[in-house]
Length: 493
Image (cartoon, rainbow, N blue to C red):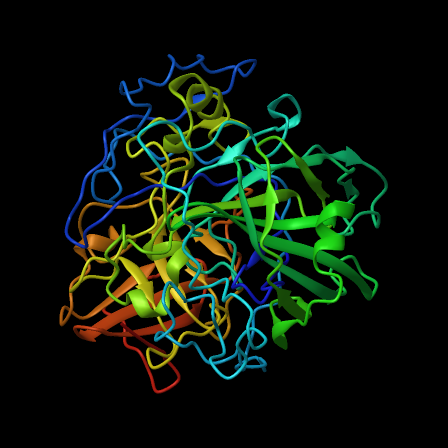
């Protein structure tokens, strides 16, 4: 569905009825998962899973991130509808994001070093709470009433072009009312009524982003206001909320008279965004209502990260931001009892994630192979619309996904296929090596299990760190060998 980088704080909004839970996974080698198939939600035809095992401290293990091989063909989830786009034939025009300033402490969210907070104001990006985290659970309240939450999608959901790479925040799916076709923010009849949103812990509202978003995703041009904010809990621990609106009167009053900063206007995917950030440093209490979901997205965005500790080792940490490099597992921040409540919703609405790491995976990068994130430009922190990723489903860890932000001639979408263990057609990503010629991916299908009618994908890694990709006519690869021509798109890492 539509995505927009709707807040200056680097949120990329994902309009799908999923929710993501973060995982702390490190390393760039060949990691492994438990070989465990997804399990059906209670009430579905497949058996209900056993309760999530939890350590005494409520944590879940976080081995290095890599998909597993499991017996049989991968199960394809049945997600909510998504909007497809015509296959692009030329590079889309995108307004550049502000320059990333890595010199700012904790600051991949400080996007423009020339636009700091007003003189004398505390910088929310470098702010470290003087509250000590201690040894107990950090969170005591859920961001939404779990009785109305259909599901939480694990870390790593993709939804190109805005979320071409696995997402570093979670999604609390919101209730849906079905209206007539043409109604709702996506024009498909889905309506998302106001649902209260709460502070997960005591903390300070260190930043509040207010954005005007314009889109024609529903078929008509509309503009609306959305809010996002950071809750500084303790030391460097942050909770980032997105797709909120309206916020509480108390929060709005806290920014009255404050000067906005980090103001910028840009576009991504189907959205144009114009917003500013404020630094109110308002004290919030666990369980305090901070507002409602915006009604413009199918999920509430929640991310947990540490601004002073790198928890995941990406090949290019400077290009993915602190939400990813400092990502923390949401479940680990609660008591074992509350963590188990969240785990019971951890899936896509039909299937539960049961593989470890239970929170999901962000980093699939495996140097010298096809697997992982590839960039259109490695010189600067930019949006994901022009990138590509060869990753795995956040609920079904053996289901490969080619997440295409931009390749001429093929839809910007998450393309799935049935993997093979040998040969040059549909080979698993980790087996495609640099300098080993052209490989082909065929019978690409969308999230509804519909095969792409007329395109397959050719890929080649001529040398480590350089990838060529080209869409070709026909759903199947035909007989190889294949060749790429001068129109192939280059990606780097």
